[in-house]
Amino acid sequence: MSLPVFKAESSVSHLRTGEQYVLTGPEARHAATVQRLGPGEMLDVVDGDGHRLTCGVVSAQKDQVVLTVESLETTEHRAPEITLVQALAKGDRDLQAVESCTELGVDHVIAWQADRSVARFRAERKDKQLEKWRNTIITAAKQSRRSLWPVLGAPVDTRALVRLVQDSPQTQWLILHEQAQRTLTSVLRGSDQEGGISPGGQVGIVVGPEGGISEAELDQLTAAGARPVLLGPEVLRSSTAGAAAVVLINAFTGRWA
Image 1 (spheres, one colour):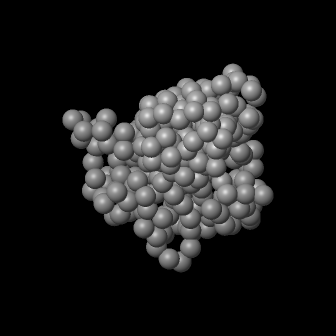
Image 2: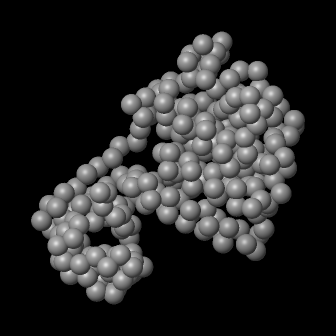
């Protein structure tokens, strides 16, 4: 059975076997009062930067759980690194996409306010909205037992997204679009005339909102260097398209080897 995972407040890379670590705050309360972990039981502590402590519980109180480090493990970034650019969507479908893609191993997440996004970032609520995205990443990363967590980037509108694509030519940007002529699988197989995805590089997936990516956005992103790709014959929701693309990339590039 997998050990429960708890979030460290800061990096744990400096700790060594036999040393003690004290879990505090909400994570300690969850361990002690919700999961009722007691002396002799085991748990994992991760810092989100790729470091995992496997620890034994020495003592557990409401706001403090004292642990002894049994082992330390470091996780490196897998290649290619994957960035998810997820358009804002109504009904928390954007958060569903972020949750799934976090579980599937993406490295970076960027919120995109597209032309046709029904949901919008409001100046007075922007920080609170981004906090929901951040908490979704944390919850999904813990559930999937990740020690290296996705980085939530600054949100972008279409102009900023176009600039991002232009300024990062080392990333192979793929726009998921239902009218694209090339399929994602052909790109991944390397049978695409423009070449496949480099296993050691970086790839960005751009997912539109419920109403789709506008023609103007598609033209601008394509001109900036992104490529439209087709997932398959079915038209997927904004909440599932990104996850489907990540699964294919994981399988074809060896990230799941």
